[in-house]
Image 1 (cartoon, rainbow, N blue to C red):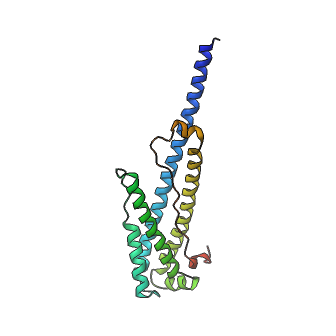
Image 2: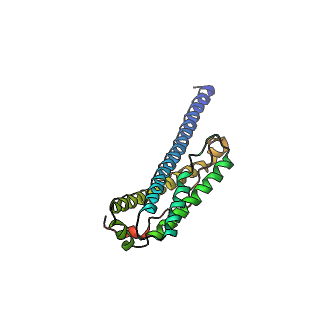
Image 3: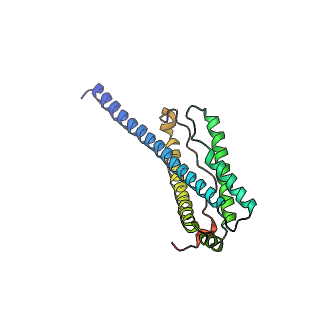
Length: 194
């Protein structure tokens, strides 16, 4: 074999490798997007259930009801990120959404601080079903946040590789970011029997 054959073979091998690397990076970006969409769907469901909780006649005082209802509506009202918006506008919207979700988490923690408060709601007509749904949804929110964090970590790791940065294999995809807010399940659900 002459040198041109070796050069062609090397170019093909390098091309295949780079193509696979770019494809893997693209799949990681898709995984991040899907994980975020799944998390947002669970957060939307949690907000809807929190609105139902605020509307129930139960042990909450009127101020706590208004607080939960307000934060739940704020969290729910953030629309899907518009792809036409520039990156800065998307980040500002994301920050507002994250703040609303964090505030809702704190309000739910305050409303359901222990198993007794959960049982008081469960004793009300329709309350048992709502408590089970809210318990399940808040657990799914925590799981979805974990899946999203894992996807972001893997994507960031790949994008930090020198060859990816040097050849700009990520294209125009924005840097994947963690959703850094407290989405913990209310303490009142922690000790319920599963």
